[in-house]
Image (cartoon, rainbow, N blue to C red; front, top):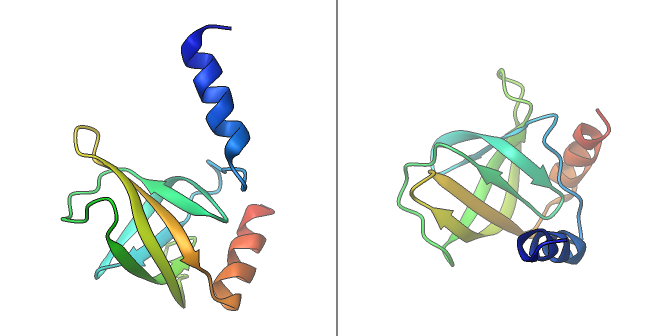
Length: 111
C-alpha cells in the first residue's frame, strides 16, 4: 500500500457515516439548488459551486429531495468544511438535522 492509498484508507476509516454516490439528491440553500456528487447522514459534496461561501461559513439547508420538483422543506444547520475553487467543489457538514429531513435521507439511502 502506498502512502496516498494509506491516507485515503485512514480518512475513510474515520468517517462516522458512509457516503453514497447514488442516488444523488438535491439540497437547497441560498436560493439555489445543488445536486450532490456524494452524500451521507453527516454532510455532502457538490460540484459546480460558484457561490461565495468559504470554509467555516454557516448555512441553513432549506430543502432536500430527489429533485424534479419533489423537494421537502427542511431546516438543517450546516457548516462549510472545504471549498476547492479549482474544481468548483463545496463540502458541507451537518450540525443539526430535523426529524423530517433525517427520515427522508434515510429513505433515500435505501434506494
